[in-house]
Structures are given as C-alpha cells and as structure tokens.
Image 1 (cartoon, rainbow, N blue to C red):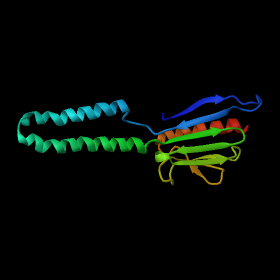
Image 2: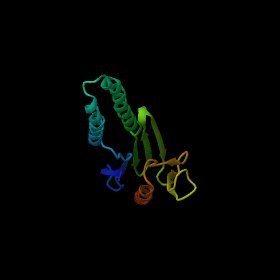
Image 3: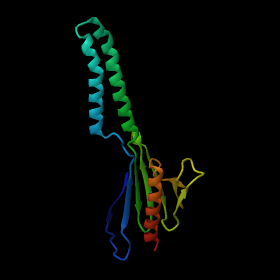
Image 4: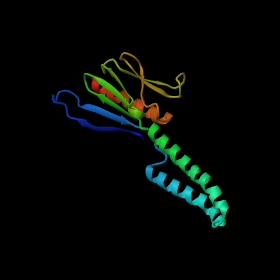
Length: 169
C-alpha cells in the first residue's frame, strides 16, 4: 500500500503512549527504471521504420517529427512525476495530531487538532469520490489520502480509528 506507519518515537514519559507517524504517497505505476525502459523501447520502435529510408532525404524529413514525439512523451512523463510528488505526514501524539501535506512545486499545508476530539469519517457515498476519508475535530475537516484507491482508503480508515483509540485511552 502507498502508506506506511513509521517506527514509533519513544515518549519521554513511559506512562504516555508513543508518538505514531504515518506517511502517505501516491502509487507510481511506472517507476523510474520502467521509465528508462519505456523511453528506450519507444525510441527503438520509432527508429525501426527509419531503417528503410536510411541514406535518403526522406529520413531528414521524418527525423525531426519522430524526435519531437519522443521528446513530448519524455516531457509529459516528467511532468507527471513532478505533479505526483505528494507526501502526507500524520503525526499523532497524546496532545496533538498534525497532518502536513507536502505538494508539488513546494506547496505545503498543515492541519492540527487535539486527538481526543478528532473523528475519522469515511463517506461511502456523498463525497467528491467514493469512500471519501476525512478527519474532523480541528478548525475544519481535512481530507486525508486523496490519492489512494477506494480499498486503500477503507483500510486506512480502520487503521486510523485504531490509532486514535490507542492514543485516547
């Protein structure tokens, strides 16, 4: 799953529960290694028909368009990688819950609340997407895991409820 509970930080006071830390990120269906293979394969497949026109002026007429096609694919995939540089960090302590979203192009947003009052809400329908997951209890409701699939949001909601129950009581 594209989220992970990080090892807990030990609390200074052993009578208090440890700090919980959750990190979420979008799923990447094409890792960097696959990106290299895809661009290489695309270039090879585009170059294959050029073998028939080697040594003729037609090659120089087709070559700029084929290079532009590969460069366009490269640029589009790079843009996709930059736009998906999203990381959400949830830090849960007995006194404070903090959700920090690090977005593309250095955008940051932060939400804080008292964990005793936070409710994990999962809307099966009625939200912008099915299985819409939010945290209520701070200055405003906040969505968590917007980039996760429906099944992942359902699993995450159960894990968040368990984590909040552990810190409340």
